[in-house]
Amino acid sequence: MAAMPAGSTTILRLTVNNHPGVMLQICGLFARRAFNLEGILCTAIGRGDTSRIWLTVDATDKLDQIVKQLAKLEDVLVIEERPEAREQVGTMAAMMARID
Image 1 (tube, rainbow, N blue to C red):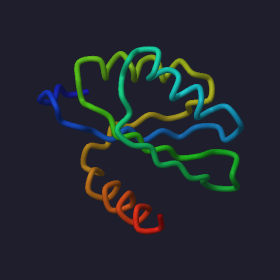
Image 2 (image 1 turned 90 degrees about the vertical axis):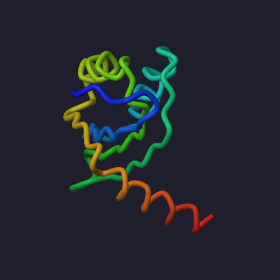
Image 3 (image 1 turned 180 degrees about the vertical axis):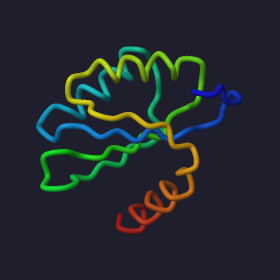
């Protein structure tokens, strides 16, 4: 992953097995390493046995280590860094805010 300036954000797109406790495992990993999640968006894909999770995170020097730790989780199938998706994720978040 490319280094980014401090204070910038990036998007991680995860494909995970969809069952109870997966989100807790992922959020717990970030919490244990004192790494803040700026935003989370999750939806089931396909027949519902997998989910897609978009995480908005600070792009700091810790990010590489977090990605390596995510890859070790059995339920995490794919991890992609998608900084170009910031605008789309921001649009989805704005739509969700209007529902509130």
